[in-house]
Length: 94
Image 1: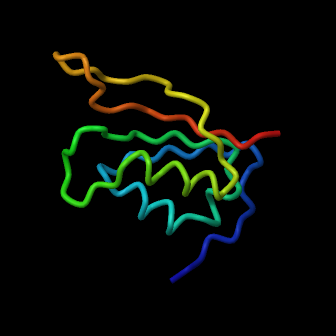
Image 2 (image 1 turned 135 degrees about the vertical axis):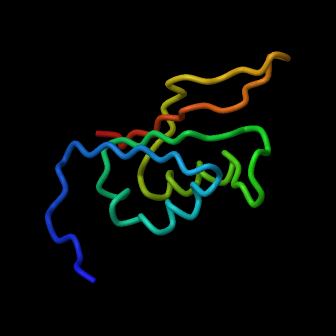
Image 3 (image 1 turned 180 degrees about the horizontal axis):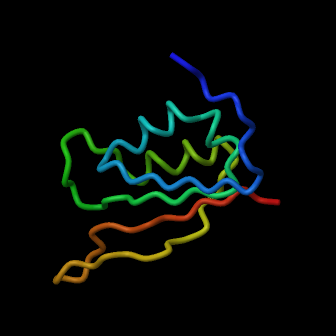
């Protein structure tokens, strides 16, 4: 299998939308995420998927890679007012 050998651009943005498998993608992509300037994750707060990781699990994984939670870009709210899912932004401090 060929490996990607090119250096990534310094302003790398990663978008992760993997229906509950965020922790697995982060674990497998540490090298790339370690080079990213920003990461956006779609995170479901409702239990929609079996084995789904939670926001509280994702936060320390990205924090350990130097990406800091910077808030939500947007969120979807259910009829009863609770947040169903959101797009969380993580940034690498300058």
